[in-house]
Length: 397
Image (cartoon, rainbow, N blue to C red; front, top):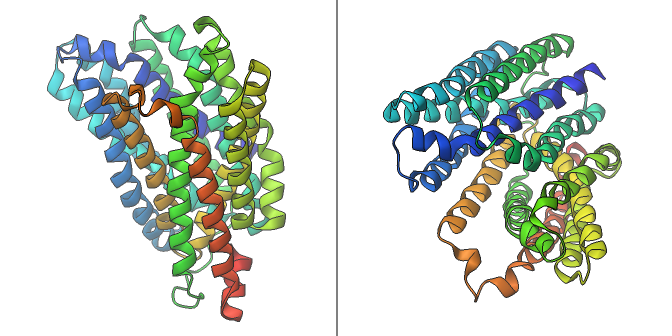
């Protein structure tokens, strides 16, 4: 329980730092004397840094795990750098130091990569196999809590003084990482990496990553592009924060069943089921003639996304077992960041407002999540086919 709470707190604090950053970024740019055009540029650049830094951090986590058997001090050092850079942002903006603010933003984006793929690698290297889905469910719970609070928090923070929220977010993140060090000491040492002794699984991994890309794009379209205009058909703008949280409340409630489903069925099979349910929920939301149907569709897609997240991270670290957990989980993390980058870019280009796009935009996540479900059926078949070695991989994944 304490391990799970620590993981949830870590992910919650990390996600809330992004919420605080996005809420205050327009005001910080204005204080630093930067034009509004810098807002989408900086957000896209942040996501591009996340993509590359996640991959680098995943490789570093594999090397640290196999050579040092301790990721915790490395994570703490990276988090300390991230916290200092994040803490400096409102002070640099307030003093008009635009260049140094941009430098601090880059340092924060790069160093914060230590709290995505490396944490998943730590769990993959050190946690017992049956406990992995449960621990990843706790980790995902932190994402759910922060994301549910996000719409309300954004409304409350805008227009206020950025310094105190940035200080509190930085200190909370550092405290959660310190707690992670204690968790790491309680976990057993990593198993020796035995590269070259595992069955080949390249085809299944490629299909899994393709499905992950479709899942990430579908999520960005459904939760970030479509949710607000869908709700505004039946609700007022003042009611939006509560309705937007529904997806994440359902996500949180589904995490424990998601962990059990992943443990019993296997990660790839559970992931395929989650993708299919997410497509069904998105279709229901796109069709909805009334708020009740829209809420049902959003709740179903949120619960399905909980299954997707737990099973996807479980599959990612098990594809990397043993010795490549960091790289394989970094691949998943980078694809999700790339999907966010593309969403920010198309919003900046005002693509979703185009009359030719709007009629089918609501159905885009349905198609993407259904495609992912089909791809995952192919991944499961690739794991089963061929030989006894392939069966060994399916048991591991």
